[in-house]
Each structure stands twice: as structure tokens, then as C-alpha cells.
Length: 135
View 1 (cartoon, rainbow, N blue to C red):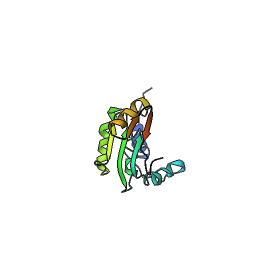
View 2: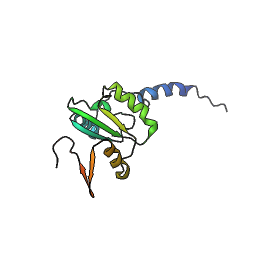
View 3: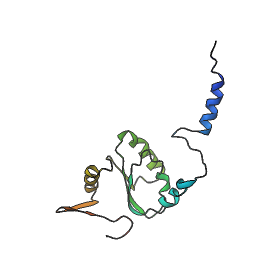
View 4: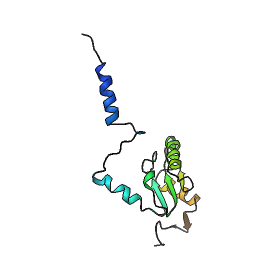
């Protein structure tokens, strides 16, 4: 019995259209909790910390002109090139800085300290408030 897979080529084309790869997008209506994300991220202002930005799929949603500076803690160096491309395409090059670290306190805090965002006084850590005054 001969296997004939030629019919799969058309099916593959259809699947690619219906389910694009990670670098392709289809404008589909957002539903459920994903509908909450764009309006929320559009309100981010001041100095913000983006935990695990990956390749920057959410970066275009940071549209508030009052966003002063953004730090993206992304430990996977292999994603930084795509993330930087997304940052540049969104016009955030002058505001967005990639921190090559995870969100673990032992690595994130030193990275934030190097950026001047955390100050240690004795045994406590003083954190700057994002989007408002000091607490």
C-alpha cells in the first residue's frame, strides 16, 4: 500500500493560515481575560517593570505617552534580539531597557540597584513607587 501525502500540502496551507506561527499575527477579537490586558497596559505610566517580556508580544500595548522608562527583566538572552526589534518597531528604544535577569529577588534586586532603582539602607530595601508617590 502506497502512502500518498500530497493532500496534506493543502491542509498544511490551511492550518498555517488559521494558526499562524509565533511571528505572524491575525487580528482576532479578544475574549475573556485577554480582553482586559490591552486597556490595562495602555494606562501604564511613570517607571514600569515588565517581568518576562519574552519577544515583546505585549510591548505594542504600552502606548501611554506618560510612560517615562520601562525595564524588562528577561533572563533568556536568546530572546533579546527579537525583543529589541519589537521595542524599536514600537518607538520605545529611548524608554525601554532590557535587564538580562530573571524575576528572582536574588538576581532582580541587584539588577534594579545597578539601574539606580533600589537603594539599600542597612537591612531594608527602599523601593521606588511605580505610578505614584512613595509608600
